[in-house]
Image 1 (tube, helix red, strand yellow):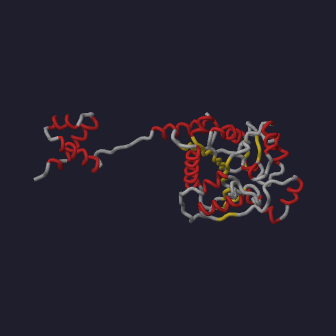
Image 2 (image 1 turned 180 degrees about the vertical axis):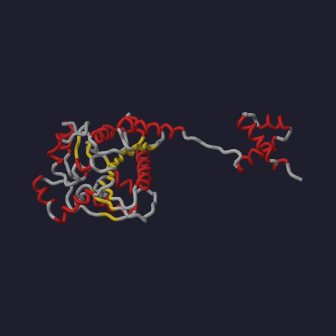
Image 3 (image 1 turned 135 degrees about the vertical axis):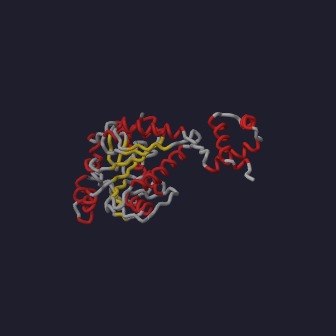
Length: 321
């Protein structure tokens, strides 16, 4: 004889009264003339069978999606990714979550056979050091955007562009090339002569092939500046440029709040790397930068046309808006 708890018509009825009519289990029991224990078992069967589907909506993520759309509209970005954070997160935890999200996004964004440029610095180093593991069966080519020969390390970590290119190839698959040059020269004329050598000049052909570039954004903060820590510029020089309106650097090129570089030519002209005008011609220009203190630099980089895609966190996103 069929048990009452196996009556699918009755199971549906119980679920409908409980979930759609907001009746309590005891009320359903009294209304249908069955025990409360039977009502409880039928509700469980309703979930297990798929009659009842429970969907949990994350209202925080929903609001972040709104932030992303707002950033895209306000700044004309192709895409903005805002990484969620909790009020309980430390600064380190918040930034680490951004690196995790960036690694996942890039693994899905890259297309097989693409040529991808990478800058130097802690941001990109930390992206490839996340715990996520991706398929290595890809044919990407990673290209350093600035010279990558130096004895300097930052906090005992090699964050030069050649090392970053190698690490990206190890993380996402594919191969890499090297930019066999210092990143910053003492004199412009010396750099120009050096870059004419065949052993180095090939890198400019690689720049022409770039489909995507990935960059961090630096700020003129003496403690946090990779450029100061790597010995590319002194604290005194950084202070001087900051007084002239420096808000950030991208691929080692300094710019002001409007993205202009003219006031910083004395430094920028000594950088061995992809020229700003060539950066602007690359189809996908992705910056990874978070924190309220990076907002002004992010805004300047967007205005200057250096980036058209942004991976950031809630602190920077709210400041930008």
